[in-house]
Length: 360
Image (cartoon, rainbow, N blue to C red; front, side, top):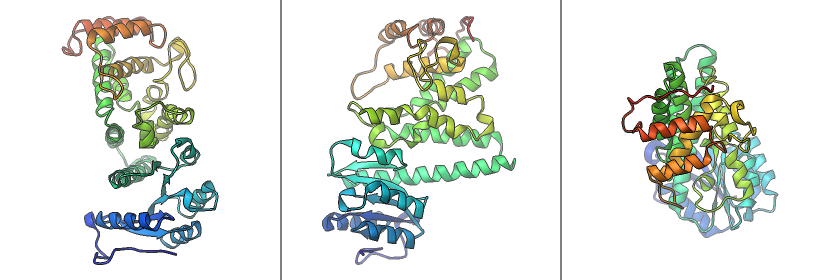
């Protein structure tokens, strides 16, 4: 077994930034193993090194403070899924990241489906590793806070605003995961608030729908960055993981009683008017009213924001696209009202008002 906590000349008891916990590295290549150790120690982390599945499991069982494991599956003879599940059984708090020698990402997807945090393809930059470690810490902290909030809610010791503030923080974290969707949820929420006020909805309704717009992508918190930030075409398996985010978001919100009216916007914002959407292929008025609104505002932000594969559309170009999608993926009457708002300058002047379509 290879086990190390520090490199020569490094302090063993103090880590930069006061970080807690150890990081396990399972890697057969001694040069890469030592490179991991050098970088982790420099960042103030505590590395544990293993070159076999047996050693990795022994370290996990003997070090209760391990919070993250990097596993190179090419380093072991044990079936990889068996090893990952054994690690999770020994310590359910450990996040697993795969370091894979394979170009085809589908080799890692069964592990993602079983709970692996992410995967990184060799050769990689250690800057990528540092970012992944930060993401793991953020994710684990949010998971801990969510558990605490649920307990407090059950004991009636938490106020509604505490839960709302936490959920907003989670939505902001999701935006920060991707350089292509930074501030996306804020923009969608702002546009939704302007639109729902334009429609003359009661304050309770426009506040709920706007908050649902802020949280609409909350289920993406569990999607690996490698999938979320992909600039190429996703594989069938990757697309399925991405398309699961509405259900994942609903699962996050379901235990929180004050989120009951928000869940429909999160769960159904990818349903299409013609029944071709997901997750339940609802159609027309089967789709909750708030979700139909968020569908439009989310779609509008997507086509008017920069993406790695295209430039943002102008107001006129976006209007043409919205017209082409009315009655197909978008509620036609709500789309007409949204177009009216745009051409009255509603996003620049939120005081304009329109007529609520006779659909709920």
